[in-house]
Length: 303
Ligand SMILES: Cc1cc2nc3c(=O)[nH]c(=O)nc-3n(C[C@H](O)[C@H](O)[C@H](O)COP(=O)(O)OP(=O)(O)OC[C@H]3O[C@@H](n4cnc5c(N)ncnc54)[C@H](O)[C@@H]3O)c2cc1C
Image (cartoon, rainbow, N blue to C red; front, side, top):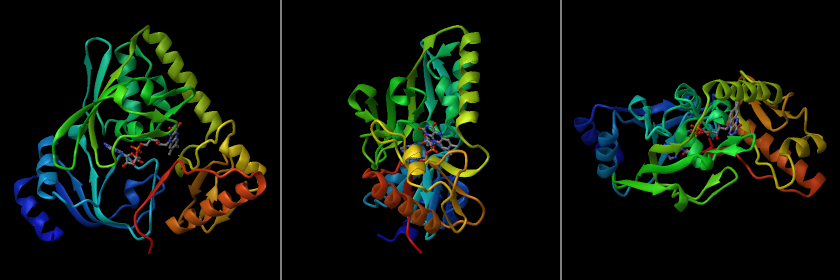
């Protein structure tokens, strides 16, 4: 299939943006990443479906949320990046205790919406800088909660442009993981809360946000935790114990405040971060015998 000529056909039928060779650095919290062959920003659900139906059989497609867990390689992405925009960021109340949210809504926006509707259970989302879509994929969470605990169902589009509804009870969630098929694009989610007192919800949000400020660095170019915590261990502690605290490669370094947060302090390339990741992984394995597993995701091509 000739991708570019196919896309020119699709362009006549839709009004969403199709961009060629645009750098992906602004789509990742690391502020790193080479160009994508194509970026598609559908105007709405129907356009997304038309687009996918047209591209039937083409499978180098990756959906991005806000890129707070994704390191994009210096060679960019040799395929199509799909980025959901405004029409996927709706948030509404349903049945008095449920929230239906588009997957490009930010976790923090959903947490605020829940607060204003006196629904508890969503407080932890105010500490996570991602989107609802990324949150479901990663089963994101903190301080004893994660998204699997509030998820009722996900509405997702498959690569044939068809909508499916997947109940949370049919999804296997584990620590920072869910087993939903890689080729599903989540478009909205139904989340369940508990009617509660807004003052106590607000208090809990403030406490969690304050705790997060103390525990983790902010206002830096990072994707949060680099590695998952191994069972009965903390990745940051193993990294520290293995003498990696001050390690760096080029402009890629380890946060002084939190050893599991890797940072682009200026002009780091993806390769610098990947080299730093390898160095730390080896050091921890040699010192402790524990093999760290990545929490952040690396996508794209090497230069
Ligand atoms: C400062 C900082 C603090 C953080 N703290 C936490 C924390 O406390 N707890 C925690 O769990 N995480 C934390 N993270 C990591 C990150 O914010 C979460 O993993 C977040 O949920 C990722 O969401 P995103 O929209 O940025 O996803 P992205 O990085 O854009 O994507 C992540 C994955 O989700 C998939 N995805 C995204 N949207 C969709 C969709 N609509 N349909 C299907 N798949 C999709 C992508 O393909 C990719 O595989 C932190 C990150 C930072 C930068």
